[in-house]
Amino acid sequence: MRALTPSAPSRGKNASPVYEVLRQFKDVLPDDIPAELPQDKGVQHGIDLVPGTTYCVTRQWPLPGEQVKAIDDFSESRRKTGQVRELKSPHSAPTFCVEKAQAGGVSFMLTTS
Image 1 (cartoon, rainbow, N blue to C red):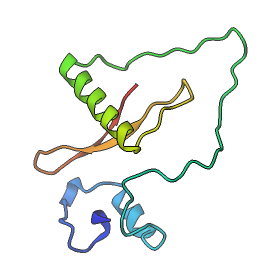
Image 2 (image 1 turned 90 degrees about the vertical axis):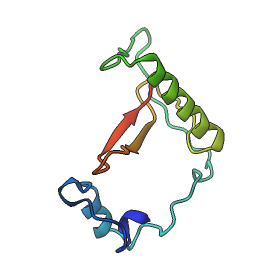
Image 3 (image 1 turned 135 degrees about the horizontal axis):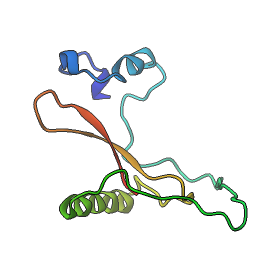
Image 4 (image 1 turned 135 degrees about the vertical axis):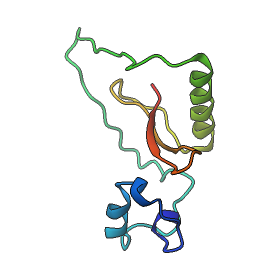
């Protein structure tokens, strides 16, 4: 893992808060992160809702059309490579950690729904 190697560049005050946790558990984490998901073991979990109930799905904020297209294209490319699977639950969405290309490389969560 690049983040755990001593040669990885330090980001100073902007270091990821996850870094210390990763360092603490580096003995149980793989050196190389696989590019694919583990094999499906046939176990599927579902949430049984009370018949007739509905759930609320709203976006926290609207996105411009080009960002929606970029997110959809990114999600579809990950689905085709097997890194993302279609979700069965209506209450979850794929989430990705994305690093900005600006100085300091601040990471943020990207959720597509």
